[in-house]
Image (cartoon, rainbow, N blue to C red; front, side, top):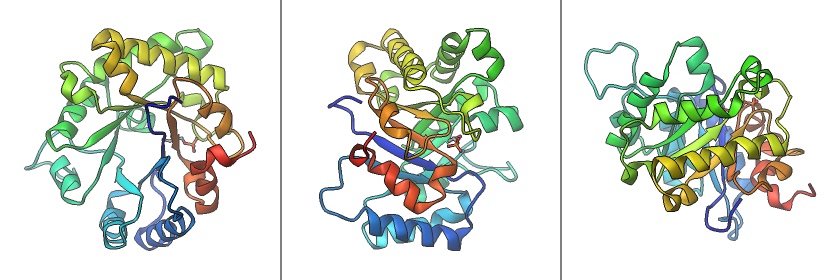
Length: 261
Ligand SMILES: O=C(CO)COP(=O)(O)O
C-alpha cells in the first residue's frame, strides 16, 4: 500500500447471488460501511450482469459509497453477437469497473491475450476501468516461471493501449492455484509479483504512471489474512471471490486496517 494510491477492495461474486440476493447483500454492505469517515478504501462489487440494474438503483438511489462493475464484456460494441454484453450497455448501467481476463474466463472460455487486449480496448472506448487479471497456474509456479508468466500477460493485455488510458488500469495478480482453494499466497509471494508488475508498467510507460496504478492481489483473501497482504508496498487492494459473498466477512475485509493482523 502507498499513501498516494487509494486501496480498492473489490468483490467478484462470480456466478453467485441472484438479483434479490444482490439487493440484500448491497443493503447490508451499505449499512455497515455507512460511517462518514469510511472513505479511505474504495469498495466495489462485481455482480453477475442480471444484478446490475438492481445494484445501480440501490447505489444511485441511496447515494451509497459503493461502486460496481461487471465481470466481463464483449470485445465488440454492438450488433449480431448473440449472448454478448457490450461496454456501452455496462456504461449505461453506471458501471465503474469491468473485470477482464479472469483466469476462469481464460480457462473455461479459452480467452487468450489477444482477446483480453481487445476487451481492454473495448472497456476504454466506453470509459470503463478494466480490472485486468493476470496470474500463473500451479505448474508454472512450481517451475519458477510465475513472474515471467504474469508479465507476459500484462504485456499482451496492454498492447497498443496508450498511456492516457493505461494510467487508470487496475491490475489484479491472481495466482490460479490460490483461487478458491484456501491456499492464499504469502504476503511475500504477492509482493514479488505485484512489484514486478509495477516495474513492467514503468518500462511499458513511465515511472510516474506505474506509481499511480493500483495493483490488487486475489486468491483466497479472507479477513484473517488480508492485513499482511495489504501491508506490502506494491499491493493496493484485493480482488475477493468467496469471501465477498458473505456481507459480514466482506465488511471486515474492507476494514482491513482495523483488524489486528
Ligand atoms: O478469483 C478470485 C477473485 O476474482 C478469488 O476467488 P477466491 O477469493 O474465492 O479465492
